[in-house]
Image 1: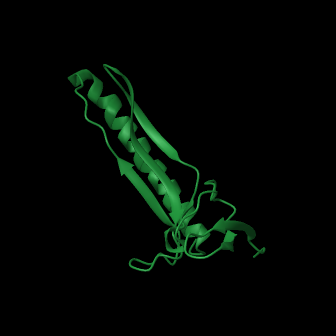
Image 2: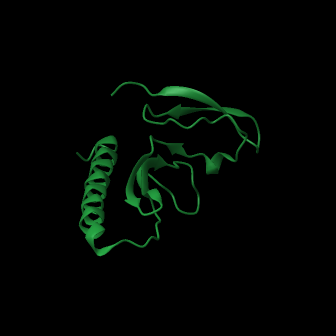
Image 3: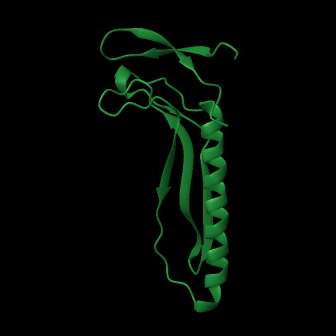
Length: 122
């Protein structure tokens, strides 16, 4: 396994600390933060559906990892999922909505498989 790239993170408690940065992390760590709050964040993936008022994003998923948490440690990358949508559809539109939900489920499976691969379980 190749050595991880290193980035400098300004830590509020003391100083600038070099930390290993996974290749999949796309979030900048340019603001001062508490070391225990440091989170690596992967590329955001989302799903949307057409509503009578236009396109509505209902799912956002991404790999994240907060390796230095104290209260709820994350020894491995996790899949961060946000689900949110409220809309009214005609009965005729529901098959399309259901199809988008099935596609979103497949998307979650893909993100989960990548998280498992990153921790060496796949």
